[in-house]
Image (tube, rainbow, N blue to C red; front, side, top):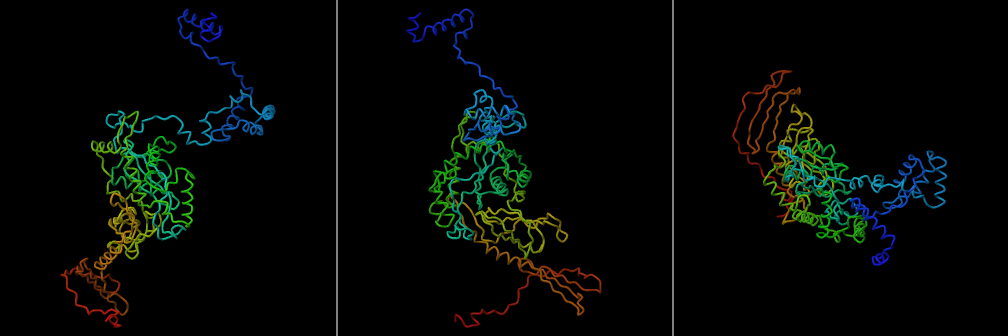
Length: 567
């Protein structure tokens, strides 16, 4: 026995216990008796404190903050000792713990909390992320015909979210208003990227880059981003969005009008695949654009210092940060890379987002947003009054600042002074499809009547368009020409009224002359006053006359000819 123990390198006592376990397993037939069991030592001593007080100590310990993910039991105990609910004997015990510098192990075991419980006090959102979820279910749905669970098809469901890109952008702004634009003619900021992601394939069908002074976005920006995407691509059956502006009253009306079911991801971040999409997108963008300032505040000190100097107007930001055209091109290229990058899933295998999305739409085609109702969903809906045959609305332009937009149409003169609602999208280029309808009844015409669907913008508005596989940021310089043409249309279709009055001021005769848009005389109406207190009687005959050439008028000499200048 001694020699065997020596060769095995163990003591005789241990060898004896091993042989005893094997003998017991052989006699009983239970092989588990041969397995050595680890000693648990003496059972822990139970804390001699009532459970109600232990629960109070446990709660204070969970709330205490002694560092990242850490708490302080002693601090929690000392705080509890000052409360009225703490009995005198427990106060004395806690004071003894403080003098000794430690808390008994049994008490520490009793009031310890899990990391998840600590997250409940510090970051409930992080706690939701750290708890259980069902992986892979976001790409599944229940078939309406068979009732069976199947994988989603491309275009059926999307999830939308916002994010701040990880580099600063220089936006042209010649109107000034801050130290940077006053001196250099540009604004600089990170601003917001709003993008949608197809749940079935992880394909990104479109994005909007929202430029605001405080780097925020509004409900009209969120619905406008979805509107522009769904108008050009396809209209999904469902959309998963978080809270805030994505579930504002305007957004809820938007989902109702489009017939899209919205699923709330508020407080449930695991419900949106796009949450994990941003991380990889930032990695791609960091290789495509300069001016990175990192994902976290103060991460890249040199670039951050340059940004502070640029915003103060002491340094030209264009020396360090990309232009809006370059940034848009980089974002477009980054999304194209992501759309072509293969995805490897343990539940669904491997696929390329763009290929999967195209294949699904080929097998199960889907329509885009109906143009007949798309104007009701325009990002801008403003109620204004028609003044001088024109509507003026000051709204935020694509470059972030507020600027006036003026709209004209020949039919607006017929509703001079009427209160109307105008719908348009400042991001469309050019802005020539504004819809105008009556906001209140006007001269017998009911509220809601559409005045025109083709009101034209006559301003040199900012335009962002595609050019040579990139983007171009400019101003629409055709607004003046549209204003001149609209003026000609107004004058050609104007009605000329003639009135003859008696010496007593009463109407004696009335004559109206209406000209067609081409300038020809279209109709003449003659009315005769029959007597005091009677209405003007209109002649039943309506004279239709062909277009008459206007008499030759004497040429009007300019002031230069009259003054003899230029001879």
